[in-house]
Image: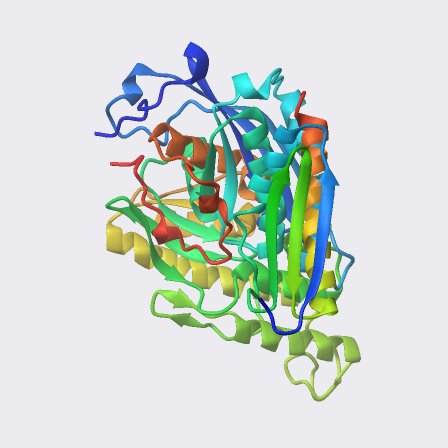
Length: 386
Length: 85
């Protein structure tokens, strides 16, 4: 039995309040959440049902011009510029009067992510902690996504597909760890889509992946896919080769290289494939690979529920394909959240951090708050689950 | 100590000694990426934050000092805006 009430709320309150700070990539997020103090959390396995109330969820994204990615240095500068303003905004929206009295714990992203952006946020987190005399908790970004997804969808023990700009993992829980069943061997799926968007020079606003999704919808040749490498390696994936290949196709298309047999009819010289078709085929191909390894993981752990988290998880087409697979399995179900919780945010860090805090896991020495660029999901001991 | 070295010392005044001590505590934990080229030491004396830099040459020193100042700016903004929220 897990006792989530080990540490009582501050000042005899009947609820916990946590502040979450996230800045591992180009999104800067600050969120404030509230957990009611419930008797039944004393014994049981209820970490997916905390009755969370979201008091504020503010995000600011560093958006680069079309054709450019975000570099660590510039992203860190963006986070430094906005961090304090966003924290202030989140506190006001959450109607926090005195942070030292009202907040139980400050949660920040410890990793994985880009070093410089992570560091610029942790500086603010440490300062707030010392100023207000509120304890700190360092959170694994991936675990943040998983816990937020579980709380929102109430999926008790799903197979988790974590797909974002920096990570691609199929995860299932077993014996106090989120175990990685399959992952990318090179680049993340979101990275693959983002970089293809750069080749196409389409805007990064609101996000490159969203714009690819919109282009893909307009494809007029959905019946005949452009053949792309299909690179599932056991339970793992490889995507860099696909990106290199589809990049060449896009460049040939822009240059009008009539020698390319895939793109142009060799007899008439007529163009057979459009940019929209490339986007569509790329998505179908990548998502089919994800569905395959997810289904295999489900068979391994005997589960029929999938939870999709991470930025790419907002993609409606991916949710649709996963849904089809789950329907074909007996009574399967897909859980996904919308862009408020899928895309990196402060609330998810607060959620995972508050669970950690309620189990008594807090930072006792600031040396523990040094950020880690590499921090695998299975390194975290999940004390809040059975 | 480095064979050839560049030195720099910064004194940053804060409003109170508590603030200076907070700043030193916040900055201390982060390790330097190249300890063989650049060393930095933080302490608080009264209401001043004292930062001592040691480096192999002026270029490395310049980059290092600039990074530390960026972090200090965040700390000062946080104290200014969020201390008496």
